[in-house]
Length: 396
Image 1 (tube, rainbow, N blue to C red):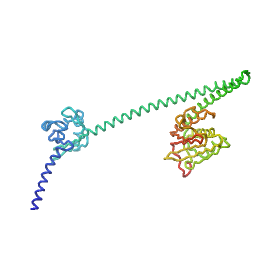
Image 2 (image 1 turned 45 degrees about the vertical axis):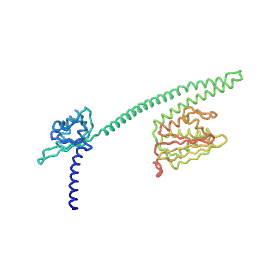
Image 3 (image 1 turned 90 degrees about the horizontal axis):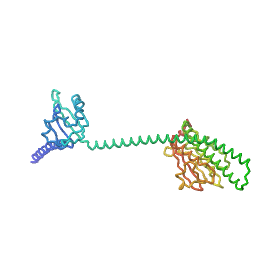
Image 4 (image 1 turned 60 degrees about the horizontal axis):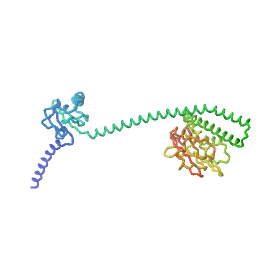
């Protein structure tokens, strides 16, 4: 009894399997069709018919597989796909557009295999088609995004070139103008000196007026010399190659040239003993930062200045910290590196040094971070992109 029941269930399961195979073919999530060797359609599943909008009898024995494609697809099938099928017996994932009955199109990937008889003659061709509408839409979105990115990159390149030309023209103008103005300023200074020496003024305010004129001429001379120095240093940095600079003797030489008797300097280059940079640029950067530390020392307090190098996330950092007057960054952070900006009017200066330091650091591909407190001091941290030499084994 039990054996009979088991056999009955087995037969029932087999019938379900046969039904499911037919249903799987017709309702598969992809299109299936079978063709004669010349491409004539002999069988299609319901999925493919639904995609195309045709009835079964309208296609079977009435049309060939390439008739389902657009004109470009038919040409490709006849010239590429059909010869490849005849030679290799299969093709995989060739992209075509199916033509629907309503005139619309459907992008598909076609794979096909040729079945042969005992004499190796082609008997039937089995074709599988996958709907790639979403994939095509995604590819088109990617293509549009790529095209837009390339357009923006080209615009940025053009803007950078224009900016570079503008900067070059501006630097050339500043350099030429500053040199052309030097001689007239020198002439004015000479005339004023001769006038002060030989002329007699009866107005009691004349002495004060002469002092103001002399001060104005001096400021004008300093401004012109500052402009010339900025352009000269930048041009020099563009032409000179980078080199290995051992920091300890380099910094000590600069400090000796500053001739400050009461300042206390602390040097620590243990973490990064050498920088690879243009020596002229590095010299100008350190001279300006150290000079500012001395120039803007807090009255009544001996200057204490620390110069050190560190490594932060693979980047070389050169720091200069002092205990000077400090800067109110809440008010002046955005103008810190502007040309001719000064934050302590009571102290003589041109407002060129920090501008030049920032230009040289930026030109080298780095950046500057500044912290400061009024009456306590300022710290400049220069993040330099060039890798430093390894600590072990000395400087190569």
